[in-house]
Image 1 (spheres, rainbow, N blue to C red):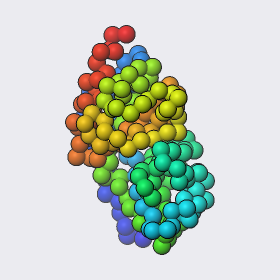
Image 2 (cartoon, rainbow, N blue to C red; image 1 turned 180 degrees about the vertical axis):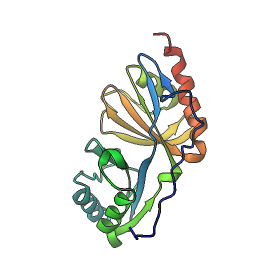
Image 3 (tube, helix red, strand yellow; image 1 turned 60 degrees about the vertical axis):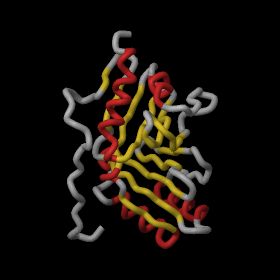
Length: 202
């Protein structure tokens, strides 16, 4: 990145909560994933396969051209995000990257094969996990979340609580990462929190 370029301070789109977690039950936990870097890569016509290879080589993570696949090294996710498009997400501190480093790495790798855009300030990320997480998600989306159909490493762009969102299943606990545009963040978090309430006393 240029020496004089400074990234703006990242501010949560959610109202301050009473604690670290939005929901913290025995079988459920809902948390905002704060200070994430989210980069959108959209390939130019005829460059899809080349771009996938370039991303995979730069990050050391397979970049699948198959819809509905999200690959991760445990710190950085490379998620299918529509035709000819991926969303690459990480927490810079956890991944050992400097602010702006992921953007620069992807811009250098992709070059003229596609467009690379920092969407960090336009996204809110929530993580929902626990034994009841699948039931909570089933209240809010119509996609089939049975393990035979949706397992770790799967993703979907779909309606969640009547809002457009991206779902990534992280593990078989199950744990889900949920991405929604910033302007809908508060309504989205409230809807997921409300769906958790029936399991509060288990």
